[in-house]
Image 1 (tube, rainbow, N blue to C red):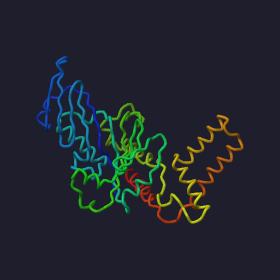
Image 2 (cartoon, rainbow, N blue to C red):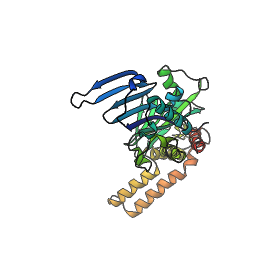
Image 3 (tube, helix red, strand yellow):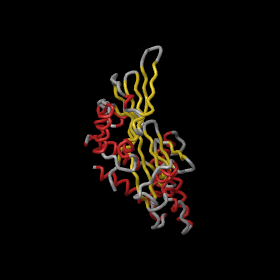
Image 4 (cartoon, one colour):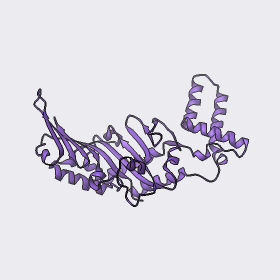
Length: 311
């Protein structure tokens, strides 16, 4: 497996020097604002959307598609540097100085089982809203700053009638993307993030580390293990575990118990009993689950491996 990769970016370059774009952009268009006299230009550079006007230039699209023609090839930081340099040379602009307004980190995983099996294992993530897209072909978790996407990459390629490389044909390809959509600098402890930071060795580790960490925030359940019917006790324990996971995990349950105690709805003794019961449900997990079929662990391990390789 190769390291996790960059994908879609949105770049903003503060510049008035936009002459000559008509010579490099396909589908080039230009218009004038009659009130201000400002020129607005737009067009495409391969798969990238390029818009110029007012005070600068906006470039948006997939870096690996721009460089390789697809986003199956790993967009490492070295490849990102090559893509940014190519953009600068083609547009005759210092793209390395452009501000990053959106950044996606993604990885494609070849899985043993159909992708839908893994998608069905995702429950909730704290501070994220979960959504199923396209008859559960895609699962997303979104908040105001980030979006986590999981979907069948082969299915997406077939839907858009794109060629599937031989190495991926007939395989179960699960794609995990972490999209950093707003306030990129703040998310990584900087005032701003520029295009040249993308291939800086120290910075590169930060979005990849966050990509890895966000995955483990998601509460998951093994669909085969949702109900254990080996006995009445195991059945009740598995029902309790499933319910616990469905509200967001033990941490959420303990917070709810604490809140009920603070509001006076329950006393100290009941609060302690409920806390112990919650912990007991978690500790009994191994007893409630059959030893086989832990397929989500396969994905856990692949995400962790991709993170380690990115270092």
